[in-house]
Length: 259
Image (cartoon, rainbow, N blue to C red; front, side):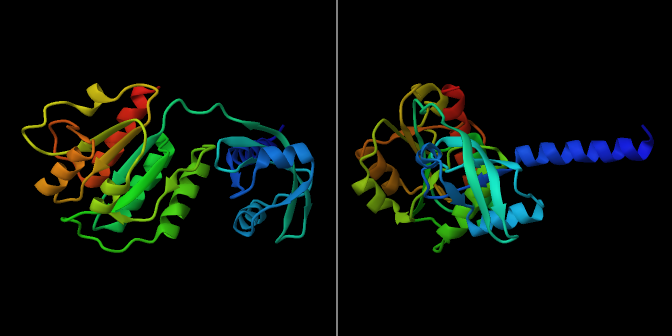
């Protein structure tokens, strides 16, 4: 085998590996049901554009997920260049999680930093995120559709089978008054009076909700209101963290406890 043949073979293997690492997302579709019914599915337009770039053709296999814990494979049945029809194979529901992690976070002034948090939290394994407006918030507008796209991209890149729920932004006061989420509730607060660390307070296999404040932190009134509504004040360590860093640290701690 000459050098050219070796290079061609190496490139072919790399392309196959890349295809296997690519995840196609079917939003709002129960893949388990459709695999049992043995019917053809049309790949969503945005996802089909990716398959076209990859030059996939009938007979090729792709990995698929619906973002609800279902993951599997599908064989391309037909393609017109813009439209792809696939038949699902080897689709399975992943075991349910023993806990759920919910982060309630004040969006950062720099939206790129908040999108970075969404991306990394999705990779680690967050279940839901609720943006909240606080007294010291420096941002008053948020595009949820943009954040959802960031989360989808991160889910696909990290080959996750679950897409986190990104809720509509709400004022912190309204969230606290209407929140009835189960499990443990914490508020990360920068104050000398807070001595307990989140890592010591989180219980394994238990739903958890964690409040993360804006760059200027929560006001004392907001902390009092959170505690009145059942949120326990905890520390994330001695270091002073940016909002997006604190949120990611909290996400990582919860996942480590439940690993």
